[in-house]
Structures are given as structure tokens and as C-alpha cells.
Image (cartoon, rainbow over all chains, first blue to last red):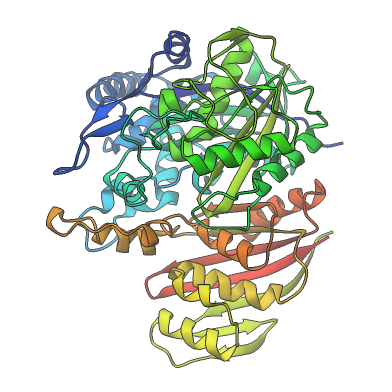
Length: 396
Length: 180
């Protein structure tokens, strides 16, 4: 019998707010973080979901001042020089570190695609901060993590994999619990790259919609606390308000193309199938799908094919990209957190900006918020390199 | 108990498989070495030439191990230190200046470390579990523990596992096959 592993706490930092409650309230009202921005000089403004830097600075300074006086002061080394992304990471982890103990058997798992890539601009050699392991170590040192940080960098499925890796390494007996954090920031690097693919939409993105024009890039950090010792009711979880069991996970490659989704949905189909098999949950039992839905024709179509192959076409489904844009390495964890909030509030959030069916296969896409009893959640994502990932969560 | 079979090491312009030198060259630069190795080993996979250097390194190492066998149940778990920084750096140079702003999608796609896993998967039609980790040093125990979970859960029967590190002219691959 393998150990059971639970998510018992989480937090997020997004343009909609710096905690889950403020995010949830905005989502309920249909508010989106996607607005028009000018990021690259001499180039047209475009739609993206960007955190206000002034607000971030203000929030971080308040946190840092109080950290200096609180119990995390002992760990907060005197390094006060943090990048914008590092501040986002620190703010998302802060409440979790305050509520849960860090021990010798606590893992620290960080998911990102590009980390501090902005530091590379106009550099002749690599600055230390662009190494993902240095970024992770800096965050780990701040909070006093004792084990070596693990960085997961699997393109846009990284956020889901953070949860899967935590589960697997806890089941392997290597750790008792884990703090996972996932994040990516909007940078000229990423924007220019997606632009070169002509993938960036000229309007707010419309996942699965007939009139979609492409993706919006977003930025966010999200954090979760994952543990196996739920059943012991130990001190570490005495203030636990909820728990979600991680029932199954899988990340299967399409083996088809490095930058285009598979036309058959093979990898996503197999990921979902594996995760559901491990979870021992059937298609009829899944109450809700938090899909990837980037709003590119090929991606959305591929997902529709994979969900239909799994006979999941009637399950209520949404994409969060209309609210947050595509937050790359952060999206999988952020969207998992919002799914769990949905389950806790018995309320499914509409798939923002979806109006008219734009995929060839049927899907039950949420046009409005909708009350629902949710026990089993399926979360999926797909990304460059042909990667896909799926996890099944159970509300306990 | 997991068994480790077929180990491939690539460093200093030399490819070693199970302690036997398979290919060695005098090439000074990695790209030159990779090209010579490709030719000498008669790999016959033209897509190789479009890959970035990290993918070429991972591809060469995996070719030595996977050969022409069936790998429809072989997972891939790789790690390195420098992520895709070798290509990131090249891509950044193409966007540093507004007067000389030429981002290329063909370069941008390689600015993710897991692309090399995709390349190997495509080559051997491996629709299997895959993961890419970035660690400050090679941690074989960690990678093996993670691989063991994949094997124990029944999601794969073998795991192509290891370290594929490359930044400019500094590189090392240490890749092996794990079976139950």
C-alpha cells in the first residue's frame, strides 16, 4: 500500500490579488487580470496579465519589515536584494511557512520555465541569478529550508508536475512533506519569443471559442503545502482547514513535435488515462476538469480530442487563461489551487470569454458560474517539447 | 531492486558506453564533435542538425543506449545544472538591441530544457512518462528515487535516466537505463 499524500494549504500571488481569498472574489465577479500593456519599446501594446510592480513592491516591503521582527527573521538572511520574481515567490510562500513547520524531512520544490531570465539582458557572461538552482537556493535560504531545493522545468506542465513530484518523492519515503512553489514572470524574452511564433493574440484570449486570436501571456506565483501525515493529526497540520488527496498523476510525451500539439491528443489522453487509473476513478466520477485551454486553435482542438477519447466530454470544464493569461510554469499549480477553491465553495467558475464553440468535438465548457458538488477534480496541461500532464485530486 | 544497465558517458570529445570508448575526436568545439560523432556512428536522422547543442548531447547519449529496441514503455528522467541557458544566451543576443531585434522561433523553441526530452521521445516514438529537473549538481539518488516511483506505479518498465549538462564548451552527459 502506497502512502497517501494530501494538499492541505495553498496561496497565490497574481494580478487579481496577493492571497487566495482576493483572487476568488474577483473570479466570482468575472474580473480578469488581462489588460493592455506595453512591454517592449517600439512595439505595439498587447494584452497580458501583469502584476502591478508598485503594488508588489509595497506588499513586499511590508512583508519584509514584519519578517525582520517575526520568527522568520532568524532565517531571513540580510540579503535584501531580490528580483521582482523572487519577491513574488517569497510572498506566495510566506503564509505557508508561517503555518507549517520546516524540518529535515521537508522538501522544497520550485517549478519555473524561465526563472530570472530578465537578468540576462545585455550581459556578456551569465549572472549567477539566472541559474534556476541559484534562484531556488536563495528562496530556500530565506525561509530556512534544510533539504536541497528541487527545480522542475518541464515547460508549461511544470506547475502540475510540482504537485506530482512532491507526491512521488513523499511516497518514495524521501520526504515527509513538501512546500511547492511555481512561478514565472513576464519578460521581454518570453514575449518576443511567443511573438515570433505569432501566437500572441490581439485581444483578450478566448479559449475554445470560434473567434479566438491566440494566447495572452500572464505572470503569477502559486504555492502549496503537501503532506503525508494527515492521518496523524500532528501539530504540523493542526490549523488545517481542508485537505485534497492527490490520487493520481502522469506526464506523457506526445513524441510528435517539439513546438506543436499532437493532432491526435495522444500524450494528453495517455496522461489522463494513467492518472485516472492510478486514482482508480472513472470518467463518470470526475466532477470537474480544469483544462489548459490556451486559446490557440491547435492546442484547444487537441484537448477536445483527448477529452473525448477519455469520454470526458460531458464533464463541466473551464480554462483560467481568460482570467490570468498563460502563466507558463505557474499555471498548472495556480489553476489547481483555483479548482480546489471551487470545490471548497461548491462553485464552478465560468470559462471566461467563451461564447461560441470553436473545437470540432463536444465539450461541456462553463459559460456561467455554476453551483456544484465537487469531489473529484481533473487538472491537465500541455506544453512545448510535446509534454502533457494530468493529476486527479479528491476533496476529503 | 532496480538494475542499472547500459551507461553512456560523453565528455571531452569522447563517447564511452559501458566503459568502452565508442567514439573519440580531436574536435575542439562541441558542435564539431557532435557532427563528427553523428557521421561516424551513422545515425541517419537529419533532424539532428536542427537541434540545439543540449539536445544534440542528450540525443547522442540516448542513441547509444536506446538503439533500435522497443521503448514504448521506457520513461525519460533527465536533469542538469544549466537548464537551457546555452540557447537562452544565444536567443537573448538576438533581442538585446531594438535596432537589431531578430527573435527566431527556431531558436526560441529550444529555450526550455525539456525540449531535449521531446527530441528523444520523437526519435524513438516514446509516448511515455517524462520529467526534467534542474539541480545544482548531479544527484543520482534523487533521480533514481523518482524513477523508481515511476517503475513501481507501473507507468513504465524502464527509465532512461541521467545528467545532460551543457553550457557553451563545457559539457557532460552521464545517461543510463534503469529496469526493475
